[in-house]
Length: 454
Image (cartoon, rainbow, N blue to C red; front, side, top):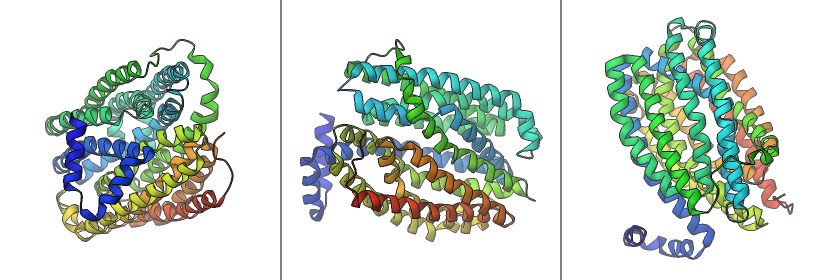
């Protein structure tokens, strides 16, 4: 009943010049699946992301520029360890559950079980490592010995994030985007008061505890949702015989991990270059504020990519290469058309946006402009990454990300004396070069007769 009402509302609000496009989407199986998944993913994300953005502004005002910079480097550190904790299991679960949920439910269940077990092992190991080495990291890498205790609290975030990644990946493989939307909605509602109140009462320590508590609620809702979807598709929710799927870890999870390693840890490394400069944490506060908007703008392409991956995996599993390529091109155009107007508007009002974060942030508006332009570029190339993952070419993705990482590190080293603007510019330059070979690969695929599926 709800779906019928929503369809009627969409038809009522659809401009006349888009009616034919809407009709083509409804009559296309692939188009309808992507549109449906994108709608529910966006519906759940809008409120949760908006609330988190407003919460971050309150947190920045409470902590100040330096304190917000410290929160940013803590999140970057968790993100760096999170790459190893996650072990590429989210992508692994999405691709293989989508591919086998109907053709081989038993195998899909084994992959879900394997993903959960490995996430517990890798997440626990990385969390233990952060717990033990927090004092050394605080003193020798991020130039802030007083943050050792807060880093230890962040180990909880690291562990729960690894579990959540595997669960969300499996839910995406089931194309349970409406369920994911509900989870995101309720988590967003809970996160806002918890984060603001935690920061107000406990400062930086309270903010980190609040993030950990939010993730615990997220894990519980994901767990319940995943069990429901598994029952719906008659996929066994068990760890029995999951060792049969261990080769998947080498073929897919390991290169996915290495590709991610070229992103999270490299971002963290470049951030440490910045915080070790004079007034480094103040500059990190500016970059952290600007990066909130990068995350928001990138959420839509990431959301669309999350919808694309299970669809592409299923179609490639059925040897439908032509439809997969058409879908990739359509997604590239859609990402650019949606994100670029937002980039333009936000760039124009960038001084006002940065001023919202409080004293000392307003002068950082050029950093925000560079970050926004980078988001526009990355949004257009994101769908190519999904076709790489769906076709199982994760080692190629690793090589592409390695090139990006090397450029980013070298450029940051050369530009870090420019503060937050230098870090943002270095990342932008790295993505420009990354786009060169990414779009080159997309053009190759469009003109190649080679089958993408194994």
